[in-house]
Length: 336
Image 1 (cartoon, rainbow, N blue to C red):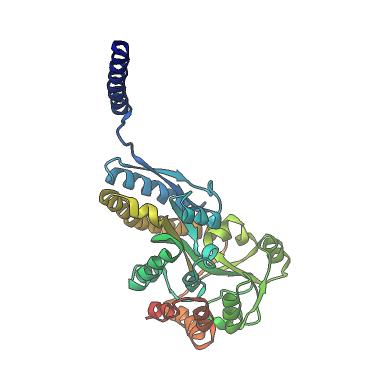
Image 2 (spheres, rainbow, N blue to C red):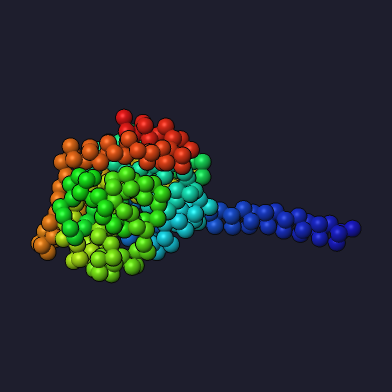
């Protein structure tokens, strides 16, 4: 009995000491929670890459060091669609994407196929930042995303080798390479041109050999592919405006503290102004380069742009766009 009591005492003491050891060990292993890392997948555009760095700097500072933005520019985490899909499932936290790449996932982005919806950059910014623009962003919650903002991808412009195009009548009969997009094709037909879908990698040779008379693209694409070397005229028709959409995993955004949300919101607002300004600076530099290379740059007046928009409005082009949207009323709201 005495031996039994000794063993019991030893076991009890061991139990008490063990519990204390576990408790002590638990305390010793407890660490301060470090900053939250957010992955930002960015595109290749110079203005977007610089804006991504600006976003990182502002968010980290405004969060008092509780956020670290791991910035992956130049499609390091995948092109637009894979990056957005990764953001939806939470493998990526924030992504920058062109609208055309994810319209099939979120149909209201087809609104950006509509030609002459916006007539100049400031007009685009005003309408994108309007109540309707916010509704388009907020609707992305339906696919698990927080629509943060719309950066600038840019306007598509018209180049050709024949005349300084200003009005729709100037493109009558021209063979224009376009994307294989039913809205774009309908618009160019309404203008009187002969739209010709063609693989992008065949376009330079087609322009050089005269297989097509003209093409339309953002200035950065025209420049990076040296189309201006085989096109005498660049008309700033600014006929289709394409934004970049900046999105965040909705659950991740909702899980942030109030301070962290405020930091992200601040970074969104300030990086948007920065990116749009930088985009315009780069476009101005590109136009100066074109002029220096002997290309005639044609700037349209508001009245000339209105003539193009009038044709789009009077044809069935906007109706085609509305059929693609979950909220067709957005077209009329933006046009107002």
